[in-house]
Image 1 (tube, rainbow, N blue to C red):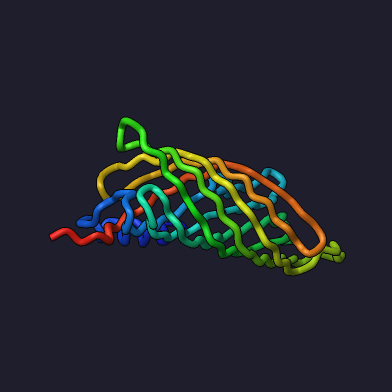
Image 2: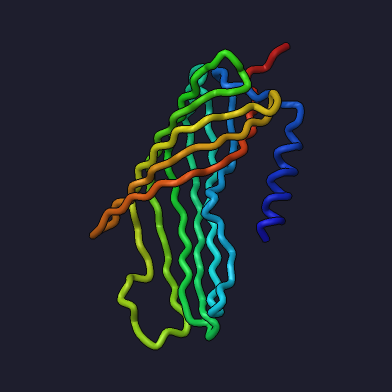
Amino acid sequence: MQRKIFLALSTVAFCFIELFAQTEQGTIMTGIGFQPRYQASAHRNGQKTFRANGDIKAGYFIKNNLLIGGELGLSYFSRFNASNQGLKTSGYSIGLMGRKYFDLKNPKWKPFVELSAGYGQGKLEYRNLSFDPGFPSSSESFYAKSEYGIAYFINEKIGINAAHFTRANLYQDSFNTFSGFKFGINLFINGNTKE
């Protein structure tokens, strides 16, 4: 399934081959990001684990190098033993984001910082357990996230980036934070028509 998603997104990206990638006012950015926490493994004791996290972003440059927009985050995790006992979690988050790019001497490289905040929901399911673990089956949270990273513009249409992020989640009765690295690919559509 991941292969099908990747092929579909790659096809969409290359359909826009005549567009311009720039961080100028009026440009629209769309992108997808992946966290390298992706994991698919089978352990010696028969335990199987699968984990994948990613996000989709879209925004508009209100000024040169200043982007505002929205993001949709998706996550999935499962762990089952040889007897098919275990759990799976899935979730989504939706929020607003702002990103500031900084110019360097080489225009193909641009560092950036990003701030975002939003709302998320998660679902937890158990399978074939003989006891009640006592965790709620669903949760809601508000989050705040910061990122800093570097973008590299492959050509005038497509950019890739690497970033470090820190995210804080506020639940009804708890709070947690986590951080990590993520990678993304962005498509820039020039909204300024030039005649």
